[in-house]
Image 1 (cartoon, rainbow over the protein chains, first blue to last red):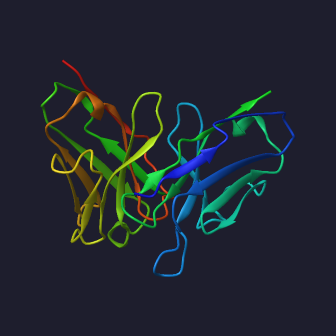
Image 2 (cartoon, rainbow over the protein chains, first blue to last red):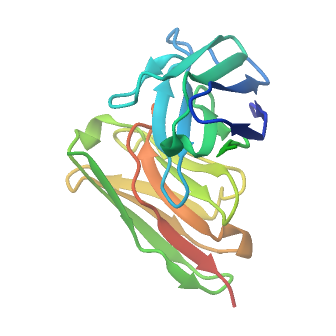
Image 3 (cartoon, chains in turn brown, purple):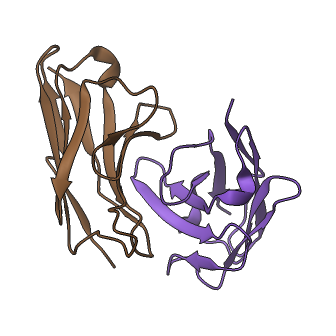
Length: 112
Length: 115
């Protein structure tokens, strides 16, 4: 199974400041079709997950442009350029390149 | 507007069975792999099962393999998860979502396994 490791597990950030979350996979996420099925999901308290970024760096429809994804191979990063109060929640990376699909443990974003 | 609505959750005793459903609308259901994901109370997300667009392939997490069965009815835009031999550790909110790019999520349905 591909293990997804997220760091940090908790991220206290001041409003208006940037935030960065890391996700590392135990093996390459490159699929046979040439795409890398690494997604970032946001889960606000009491809400279902919501897709933010797919295939490493593609922002999903309606997602604010302060969210960006990057990376390649086994190292991936989600960045928020300026944190807003509505960004509080837990952020998960997920790989869908190989069964079983696997998630990182999540990084909890808190406001200082 | 895209909607996924899960139903069928509830309280069940260990060893019991339950069938979850997911009603899809607002997109071409028959063209999408579909996925079940669950989240135990206070825990992270766990992939449960996938089913191909035409139902010809399905895959399961080791933790549910042999006990859970995923199916779909493309004529009704419906996804199901038949759960048998339920255990305490199956207690979770169960979500349906789309396959390799999970861009649609329902609100989830809570399954509680307890005596």
